[in-house]
Image 1 (cartoon, rainbow, N blue to C red):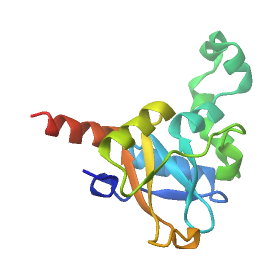
Image 2: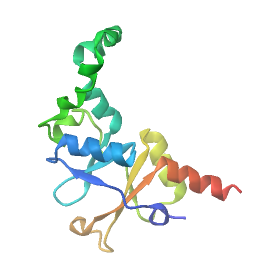
Image 3: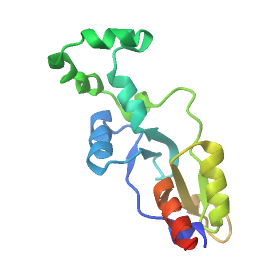
Length: 157
């Protein structure tokens, strides 16, 4: 089986989209992360849900987690306000590696190896034109770890 057979449509956000909109997308769809695409619609990063959660936690609590106990629920309920006005590009870690990319013709083992070595629950799948002209490259979607595991478990039966 090839990556093109496992790929599913997957939501994307742009670098200049609102961080709150990205957070809503992640929460509503219960996604482990979202693909961040450039102006051509090609993946430039994966924004993990955990990164947005990290941005919600005040810096002093990150430095000393015991201080979390002193934050009242009223304050906790307003934590998402920290994302107001932020763009997706501002939420990405500065040292974020480029997203793992699979070619549509990659095998299941190649996809699994990318996922394992990149320690990522999400692989973007690209289709390249026959002449390999980068301007014709397009995003087909993504393969999630859950879907890859399901395929491998089904194959083991």
